[in-house]
Length: 320
Image 1 (tube, rainbow, N blue to C red):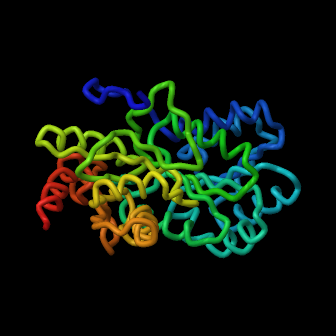
Image 2 (cartoon, rainbow, N blue to C red):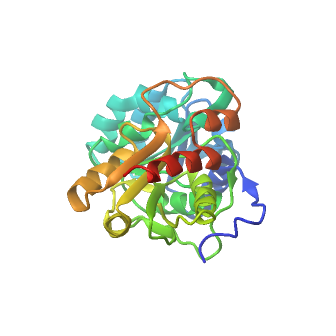
């Protein structure tokens, strides 16, 4: 088994803390690692790296474009660079620098953005990055990764540190429930099936993976068996697991803490239209901005809790 027993109350841990801890561990092994932040190091938890290795940490201030350009310069000099701020600021403010400086030259810059998705909560629409995956996956040579628990966050950061390519890694503000057991190994070259079924395929990643696994159990109780596919790597998108599942079930649901435009759901539809045409239903935020509210209430409002996902899937499965 790769997934812990969901009937047990899962532990939770901050993915931002895991990110900071992992950076410190890697920094002790690799002296070429440098870390940049845009005046949010306490929130992104890169402050841990600053404390351990102050000579390799650079606070660029509230100047995100300058941070990315500085990261590119350091990468040109042979450094492995981790640059962090909130997802909203790491993407929309820096598209020119990311596209034309980092990705065009295939530089070893990892943009690790925290506070992704609607679960930024009370900070509201101005801080809720609902389009960031869409922006990043549209840029040539950018890899886009959305891990689902802290075990996976650690493995993704380790993978990023040893892989000299541009990457966008999205981490939420919320604490994540522990999903994967000790046998789980992050595979950057495949989607992974976490539950086997014959009636439906559900594809997800990030925070919504736990909600989807819980939903699949609820569906099982009413006789609907779902394949659950976890796709932490949104780009490059590896279609084999999805193709095999969709050819079997003929119905696909995508769940993501992101706009339904341009994110994981779009990657799934692009893949299926080529490899295995299927009926697809996408669950995420619609063509809208977010709003201020408590995290769980926002998940409920936008249909991303297990209860709401279950209700939507029941209606979808009734369509003939």
